[in-house]
Image 1: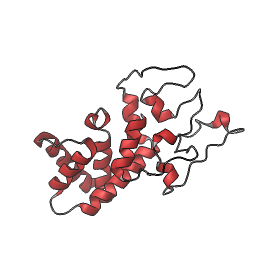
Image 2 (image 1 turned 120 degrees about the vertical axis):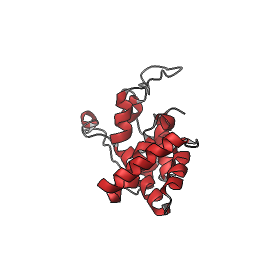
Image 3 (image 1 turned 90 degrees about the vertical axis):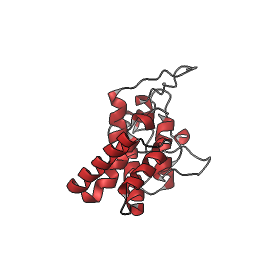
Image 4 (image 1 turned 30 degrees about the horizontal axis):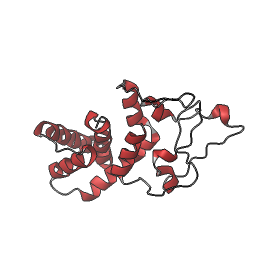
Length: 178
């Protein structure tokens, strides 16, 4: 979970390079921290603040309650020693990468990057985007599917087409299981 979040932040250009310092509090789903509000406030930095996008290593955590998106990707609680992590592939993980606020912000930032570079040849941009996110060259089938997605997205939502493509790229199995 930590590596997947860090990878999304890195390819979107949001990852902060700041090292050391206090733990950070990235966005949390509503109500998760409610039992601890009296003694321990979760103060998420504003959008644009580099502390919001620091490496997952710096994420504040309680022993009995891991950061929710990390837990979805099999992060153990810190109540017991865990010599290795068991891994799974569940629909909940896809919901996290499609809906978690951090991943949505990453998709938006990556979409803006892609839109700013987009020229007349969207296939070339799509090919480069696929390689950036997955580290692999897109085959013809994948490039064709991405092209179709981009064309359909431009018709339905021209201003968000590249963000939609970025969100799909960040949610591919090729991206999540390196």
